[in-house]
Amino acid sequence: MPFVALPEDRIRLFYRTNLPGDDVSLISQSRRETLLLLHPHFLSSAFMYPQFQDPHLKNTYNMIAFDEVGCGDTEAPYYLSDGQAPYHDRWVEGAIIARFCDALRLPPVHVFACQVRSVQSAQCFSSIFPDKCRSLTLCSVPRPPNAPATDLINQAWFHLLNVWQEAKDLETLDVAIGELVYFQFASTLEPDELDDVAEHWYRYYAPAHSANFLATLLPVRTRDSSTPKDIASRIRPTLIIQGSNPEQEGDLHPISIADHYAAQLPNVADGVKILRLRNAPHCPSLPRKTAPAVNHGLADFLANLPGEQPSYINPSEGSRARFKRALEYSAELAGLPEIATRNPASVFSFTRITEEDKAYRWIEHRLSAQNRNKWTPVNPDGSLPRRFSERSLVMPSTRPRRDSVIELTKEIHQH
Image (cartoon, rainbow, N blue to C red; front, side, top):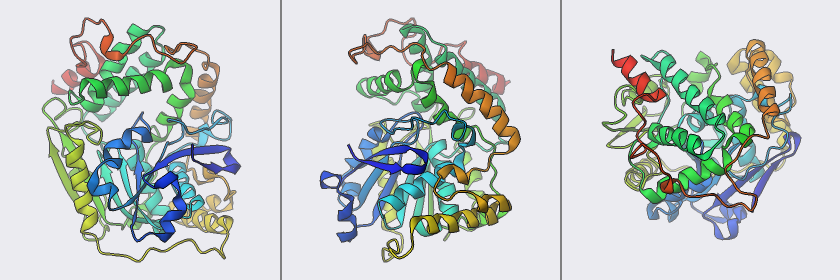
């Protein structure tokens, strides 16, 4: 299994490619451009297979994806230490992307990012490391903080996740999974796809794996600290792909979010492009019914970008010097000179967490550390008691009960 090591932070990022033997050295010998895939929320790079298998993409680009911290096979054994979890925000995520590209000596990459965590980290990556980014495709951008009912929906979302983390049996966990499936995919997953997603959640996000839960949530629970200079620095060609369907239209994922998000990127070269997908869920890159449309839109966008000669890392400049410059640039964008004085070898040096947020996060991550030995449905031999589709629930489908937190949120908003 291939990994990229971040020695200072003792993190190992698992990755996969479409290259023979995952040999990334072949990229420097190739005329193809490089496409970096950032996976959807609560999933891993294993769920980017609709993109890896798409002939228009795999036959045109060198493709690479890694498991984010707290996801899949990436290893972060010291994540719950005082020096990591309390500082983990979207700017740290952007630095992780840059470290990954730097370690593999990749040329500037086209980034495909799906859902809120990946979208936010891709934006930070393009802000602080513009020389490493060719373009951005943002699939399912997040709701703006001031959108109607956003606070209410966020409360419902986090309440659902709290219920999930308190589950002590498979039936309770299945109810929570059914609601999260609806939130992410509406009714678009085929039975085999639904079983695969649920199995992933059984294995990686059961209550016993609270560190994974925390690493997935913390970057998106932080206030957006982007400054006017940050926003002005976002100039790379950008495509937004936004799904819309009757089940999720309006309250949960209004398609108008795409227009609002595009308006926050005034300096993007040639303006932000928007692809609206009808009858597609909030996460359209995975379901068999909608992934082809996502892939077609991505391929068409990339094919129409102006050509650019690949540039590689200057071997005469060390990694420490490159990231020292990046810290200084981040400090300038943020208006926080103290950032420039930090250790350039650590991705957590790029954080913009305030002292107030840090105190709150410290309590939260210590609670997660104390709860690491909770229940898991996985048997000692690694097997599962059953597949999600074999459950016996009152609910006839994955659509939430009328008294679920998501349904209640929708009804409150309608009134």
